[in-house]
Length: 168
Image (tube, rainbow, N blue to C red; front, side, top):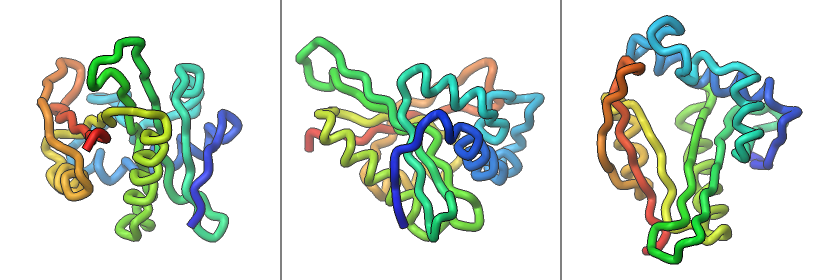
């Protein structure tokens, strides 16, 4: 297993990983391109390119030279010194279905936690489908804390935010 940072030239591969990894979730929760065109199961190369332009960084996990998973990382540092001012987002954690339950998602998450520590980040935030109990439980097992749940008019599901505190 190897994790490395990738760049915009890999946008097509990243979009493929995100799209394919999220298709089972879309099926399970009845998400389609009609009721949620921005769901990761609909990911296109242009979305990833826009992420790079916004300053998001992507990391890819390969096994035996095959790209099987990826994650995005976005750090926000504030000028303020108050606690919690430095925040990062763990986005688009995606593992191809046939490679799930092998520890790849955990390896990528731990990699991002380590990177956030190096960046002096206080907290990592994620958002997940509220009814996706299996994923919520998985994140809780590795130390994420469940936060608020929000309902958005343009989404066919609610979003629960979770955080990982690095100031432990």
